[in-house]
Image 1 (tube, rainbow, N blue to C red):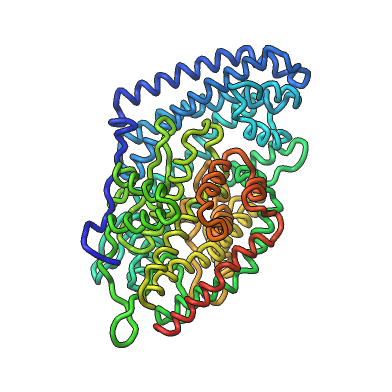
Image 2: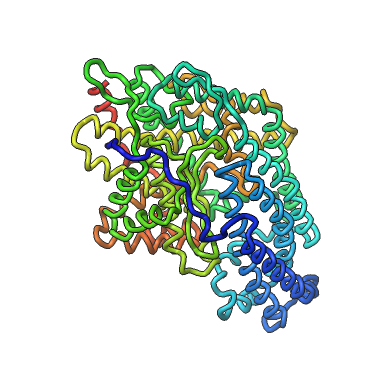
Length: 621
């Protein structure tokens, strides 16, 4: 449907958290954080006495009570630090030139370093003491909710450096690896592109130009892509320095941590995702098996646009519209934001009315950002304020069907956090791979609802286009990113890479996965993709493939369980903060993620849709 109404989305409301970046409320929370940090540091004076003899500490030691108090204070401090940080980031995302928010981010740098420094003794203590002492620590109301986190962290205690080294690494990170990440983020919000729109040259920000990649006009999309790459090409040395520095920092830490056994650069992201390396290897192997199916989708999309292969500017291309006479493309007015919300609300509500009500609440309370402006940062995300336990969704909404699906995706993230809001703080964090479960499930639900409501082949084709587009995205593009990053880290072990070498690595990865369905690779994708520069997270790529295929497995349960699905779905989401992915799948899906069967079944569930899509593409174009 397309219709009347304002296409662009609204500005979000952040005032329920703080009225302004320089408000008294922000100052009060900063002051309270400082008090809590000082209290932790006071308790650390006692705890530090036990660290040299940690292995001989007994379960009845007074150190346990001290450790529990530090945990209690640290939770309160983290809640404030996270809240202020999310607020500042939300402000800067909308306006990268927001001086007050940028100053606030600056004020947080030292405090983040202080928090990490203050927490190090507790982490060292819990990693070094015997199991019996850990069990004593986890008894009672104060720390019992952290059982999974504590035991999961202990799996990597062979990597532990000395307290002084851990503190030094954390302190230097703020002006080291994290500074490079902030530089890239700031650059992405201020970079300008010269792009050809309707025959006229326009200067636009990266986020606005990225919106043009959703246009049905193939020439506009290609022009937008080339202008974005040209803009990043002008900053290629900066991006090269940032990427080399971020990877180099991580690799040096791996070398330093290789005390008892070698620490590989994939160990940290695999552990952070709460999965086994065997699961990752199986996942990538099944993705390789699924390449032909994904390439079939890409080739059908290319034929619909009247060309032999897709271009790198076609990743978010909408379905071409059917017009009278020969097949062609027309630029529609777009889907109004309110209409998109109505569609998502109805689809979510088909699972359970509470899910639809949640979408309505997000819109009514203005917890969704959807405006378009030159100073906005590209991309979309969901964040959550820890004090109020309320989510916010960030998008740049331009009215394309892809925008609707992105909105459905981010609202899935928001719903995930919403159903966990009553759980202890320690049980509200989950691995990145599982983080994509609710978001990708939300996409699937919306696509299914739109497909069911479609009344003709043209409408069905448009929905299947969006549904099947996930295969090239997740089975071709995501593995290409993973292979690029893995090979880049291998080479960075020897020396920093030069721009031409990085471009060649990126091109080779695209060609290896896309094969003959691609007209040309995207040699600058490593520069234009924010995910490679997120300083707190490495290999932010395979979690999307995991989440996509895992969510298809969850989605299959909807038909099997019928009316009982919603309760089972919420139960799964609520367990994501206290289980590994393998444990979660075994408990809720009866699946072994280290074996290919589950993943192959997820891929197989898309076969019939791909066949329908190919048939409609042949018939309509």
